[in-house]
Length: 320
Image (cartoon, rainbow, N blue to C red; front, side, top):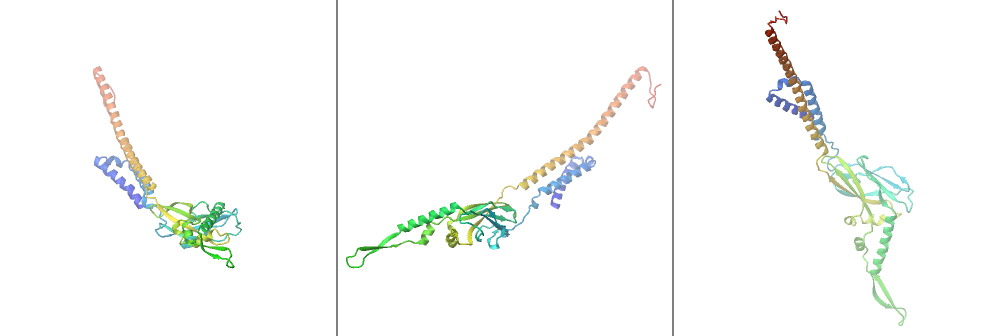
């Protein structure tokens, strides 16, 4: 409040000093009321536009309260708070594996969606689909392709004779197939949630967006177990990887721009009020002088006429 008030008073002080320099301070004293109102208006607007009062809720590394809920089989669960280790940290990127408990009443072909909430429901994402017909069909295709690669890796090792010396030769084969290497080269599609949190220059969260993306390859080895059990219909709780990414909007603040526009507008109003007040007082003096000059001129004309007629005016306006 003091910063805004001093900003307005300083503008008024500068204006009064300028008027004193021009020698108009005496006339300005007659208009203290409107100028005082102008000072108050400037102080208030400077207070509203002062960037000091930007709200800051978080500091870097602070825990951002996070909740989740699910939707399946036409029903929605209640909000459940996440543990601290699964929440976002203000200003810090990170990735966490959020457990999803087994939903009661989930059918085999149901669509399973989740929704995330941040900062006590101030920012809520849309519904994010984790399991549906598309993901199930994609995993079925992955299994077929896996079987094809295993068949191609089948190579004959040796030939042995059957029972008896004249028996037919029997071809034995084995697999030269590294399942772990194949998993790294051809991973199944597993959804992950990418959350983009946008912050301002201070400690406020402006808005949040989220989308489903394929699990990044960098997390395959560290979350191999979660990936392999994700498509197992009977394996619960499942885990979904949630990636938090922070963005900073460091563009010109709307509050700054609005505040300084209001200040400039207030200064313009102040000088306009001053000019109108001074013009009013100076205009009143000019009119009075004009009237006095007009009356004196008419008096002189009448005296000349009376002199020409030989009539002499007595004091008090009477004639002889």
